[in-house]
Length: 75
Image (tube, rainbow, N blue to C red; front, side, top):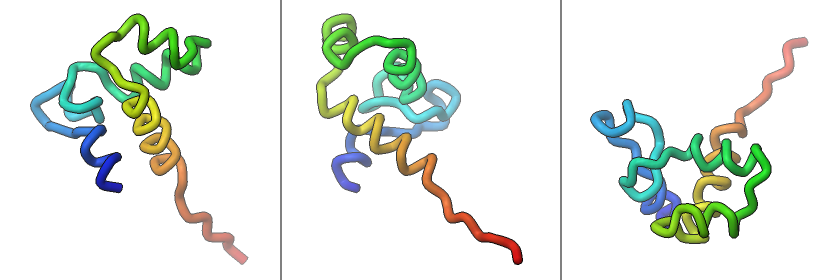
């Protein structure tokens, strides 16, 4: 969790409080959108030279945690 907390930052005054990468002005949603749009990790790292491979790992881990939630079946 520490590595994720170091990579994904949430600041109310930056990008309207959206989760960003290392305090930069690129959001988790930006990177997820690029991946969903067909860009590869190498494409993203080439186009955004200030990003690191570990940033993309953190984005994916953050998204996975956000998507995971308990399901309670009503009987």
